Image (cartoon, rainbow, N blue to C red):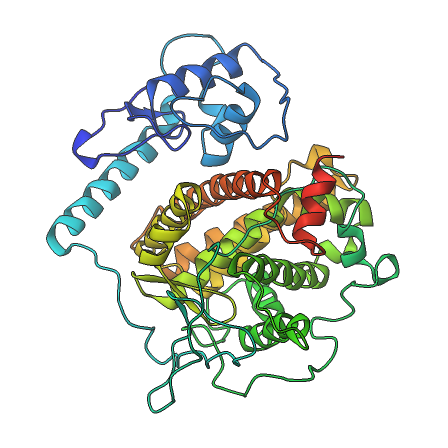
Amino acid sequence: MDYSYDEDLDELCPVCGDKVSGYHYGLLTCESCKGFFKRTVQNNKHYTCTESQSCKIDKTQRKRCPFCRFQKCLTVGMRLEAVRADRMRGGRNKFGPMYKRDRALKQQKKAQIRANGFKLETGPPVGVPPPPPPPPDYMLSPGLHAPEPKGLASGPPAGPLGDFGAPALPMAMPSTHGPLAGYLYPTFSGRAIKSEYPEPYASPPQPGPPYGYPEPFSGGPGVPELILQLLQLEPDEDQVRARIVGCLQEPAKGRPDQPAPFSLLCRMADQTFISIVDWARRCMVFKELEVADQMTLLQNCWSELLVFDHVYRQIQHGKEGSILLVTGQEVELTTVAAQAGSLLHSLVLRAQELVLQLLALQLDRQEFVCLKFLILFSLDVKFMNNHSLVKDAQEKANAALLDYTLCHYPHCGDKFQQLLLCLVEVRALSVQAREYLYHKHLGNEMPRNNLLIEMLQAKQT
């Protein structure tokens, strides 16, 4: 059964972005995706993907890969059990109350938006001091600068912008062999992670106030045990920044020339991913898996984890006119528009739109760590050797997030579903980021001797 829809809400289909026509099989979708989902389920169709199972699904390309389209239907929340097996028109009536409740919530939100509007805060979160300025061992460019506390001298002189790039995001790698193995277990690579912060730096940055999260770390009532454990596993942002800045300083010693900004940004992404791998190695369930399963999970989601890391940093940053790099430097969006090129500019703007979505949803740190865990375990279990362990992790993380949102945000009854929809956009962003890096790789613009280029080369073998 299809339920009426208030067109004034201006919703877009979460599968392909077309205009929605009503509530179909669990949520608002367009007519095309409604029919596709119904035919697939009733005819028991099985599809295959000729690419890497991450095809872009939008209004213009939704028919190119039925496998990825159906997977996206399931990911965003379309219900298999809502499709009638007798091939009659209409869905099953047991979803009627959910549709009506969802429609009422959306109308209420629309009224609130009209009454109050929404404006992104232009200052840093209350109680969070700005990050310390980076040491002047590598040159900053116009539009690329570090915010400084009051009373401090200005930063180093600006240099030429050159080939500007935003925080780079690595390509996914389909094989279970390659450079990633060395980061999981040190015996395979001289650059392997031995610990999150394996050694002191020769020229560490000056200590400053921690680049922390706005919410204090505390358990409190209604926080599931899984989320508490994940909060304890979160790396300290101040230490991550110090380690990455130290790594960026090392190659510059004894060299009169300065690396290009795009090379610096690729190395930032390189080192950020190393920290992400280290985080994954310490995660519950993940550390119990076989090496092959660990690599399969990381190869499936590492660009998504980097995108989500970048997006959450912008939520912390809280400024509309610039983006914050992992080193604590700001990049003005006007510089991105002027120097980055159309591909990268569209990627940055799309990420900023997701930042606004998550700010509107009031994403907090507890939800962030749970969503990050869900991204890590987002692969279909049929690709895993230990199906049961991975499926159990997926179910527990979903249950923990649902319990937490219902307990702490009872006025936002659909927050759980809205957060999962944001993960769909994270995946779409990661696909766009991989396409951008592949474009740079084909143009021989990627820096050598780092994890990014190794992953790009491994994908072609």
